[in-house]
Length: 189
Image (tube, rainbow, N blue to C red; front, top):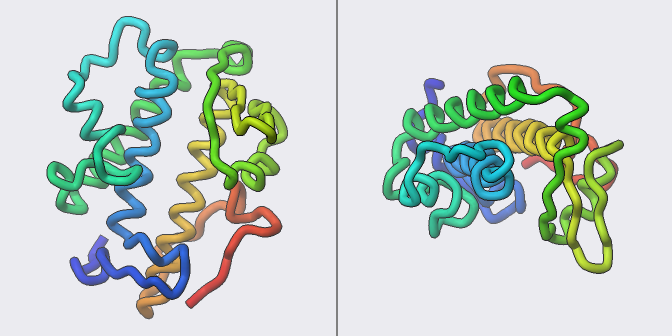
């Protein structure tokens, strides 16, 4: 809140974490929620359908924009944050619909890149990763923990982007998840 377009869109190639602006980080966070819930878990979470048509799902979860919302539709930060909030509400509805035991018994398979070799260390349960194939079996519990850890890590990146611009972070974030792992890049500008 209260950031200028220049501050929201500032990026730098000096650090890998600064290659995506605050706007892009936020867009990725929103899209990530929909990618997991609609594309990977959709059949199980929404057996009656999502109520969204293919173009809506593409704009949210599968746009040509690399792992972010469709930039032709979601241009303003207000649109991006509204969509992020809607994704969080959908996640909460999904969590409210299942017991812990159900979430631990529901699974999907997902191919995951080499960054998961480190990220899996944050998960005590819920993700069984085959290091040779990169294929993992994820429970619903493990998936929702992953989404939480990813959201927290992108908030950490947003705070670094703010500090790199001489701005102050507005809130403290939980010290959990991926950015707390030994070996995670926590460098500052």
